[in-house]
Amino acid sequence: MYRVDLPATGFFEAWRSAARRLASHAVAPEMVQWCRGAGADLFEAAPPPDKEGPHKVSAPASFLQLAETVLCHRDGEAPAALYAALVRHQQDRGALLNPADLLTRKLQAFAKTIRRDIHKMHAFVRFRELPSDSARRRFGAWFEPDHLILEAGTPFFAKRFGDMDWMIATPEGVARFEEGALTYHPPTTRPDLPHDASEELWGTYFANIFNPARIHLQAMRSEMPKKYWKNMPETQLIPEMLAHAETRVENMRKAMPAEGPKRAERILDRLRTPEPPAMPETLEAAREAAAACRRCGLCEAATQTVFGEGPEDARLMIVGEQPGDMEDLAGRPFVGPAGTLLREVMDEVGTKPAWMTNAVKHFKFKTQGKKRLHQSPNRHEIEHCRWWLDLERKFLKPGLTLALGASAAFALTGNASAMTPRRGKIETARDGTPVLITWHPSFILRIPREEQPLRRRELADDLRRAEDFLRQAGGEAAPSALVT
Image (tube, rainbow, N blue to C red; front, side):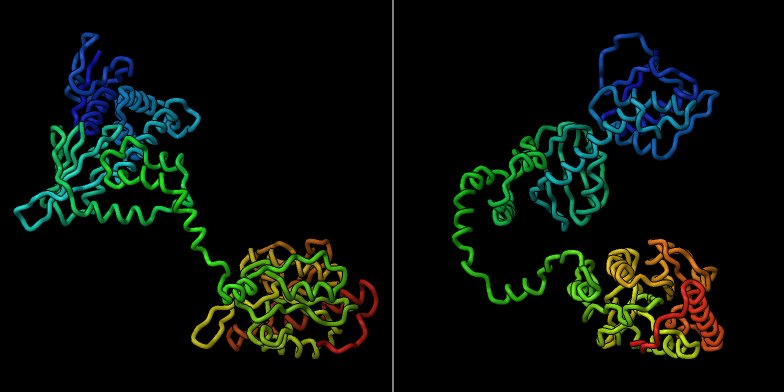
């Protein structure tokens, strides 16, 4: 049997050194007695070996961090449980990572308790200013933690109050921060700390932020247990504040304005979300419903919803990404530079009238000076707006859909893979209908000038392919109404 006495301070280094030597000699956990302070010996025990033994001992950094925390627990089983975990780790490297393991759960429970105790220390230590003969101000505090957290909890104060000297006394020891150095000392009697004038200011602030209409006593006691109240000046005000809470709430109700300012009603009108319409029964009803769409945040900055347009008997549907700056102002799709290019290519190849729309119905942009710069919609926005696209497809029942660019292809097929290998191929839409993938004309306008003719020819080829597909699938395309 071996006995290890852990000191009141510096116990982590003492435990680590002893545990490493014991494990290197393959000493079983049940052969070690871990003691804090001067405990009585129930068994005859020897100190740990002076030197390390033949067995190599290792532990991950995460275990050492866990051990440093767990050793703060006042429970006498904490050091023994850590040593048992260390010994087992030498044989089973995965045991510490198993959350269902009883020993691992026990150590994690110890650590959770310590982290909570340290959090309370950081929140509830109250300093009082002490007389000082030097240029640095001096403060003192008394705190009674549940566990041995003096060394673990006080470095926080050294970082926050590094420009002053302070002392935190606890029943287990004293932490002193003087001239930038943090040291630990044996416990003393509770210091007689002077009254601090700043406490009155702090109490005034605490009383003013107290909201009597939001009292939740159980939650308050959970966050601020009563055992800490005796050392916190502001808690002396709580009984009186609770006693007058109902009166203050009633006064607050009486002080409320009977009518809101007129501007409030205007703001509410603007922000009020219209009642969602019933499922539109016609394409025109869908257009009207989309005009009031608030399914995502794009409607807040965009000028208006840009719904699709074209002949309702069109067999070809062309879907772009989203309206641009000009489309947003005009309220019509494909009236900007990209739309102009698309219409030119459609005229060249003799594309029949088509229904033209976008995957997203609102313009997404960021401002730069007076300019509104296009921003691609994200998946969330595309998915929200797909509800309108699906409605359009439900009423129009196109024989073929031409997806211009990646956003349109994703909205229609759910496939977000790269465009290059997909261009010119027919895929299947989410509703089972055919979709031909091609370049968006805005992409052609953005690439280097020398590459534009090739991509333009490919767009034209795809439009011809669409016409051929429709012709083979069901006769000639729709009559020659003008593309609007």
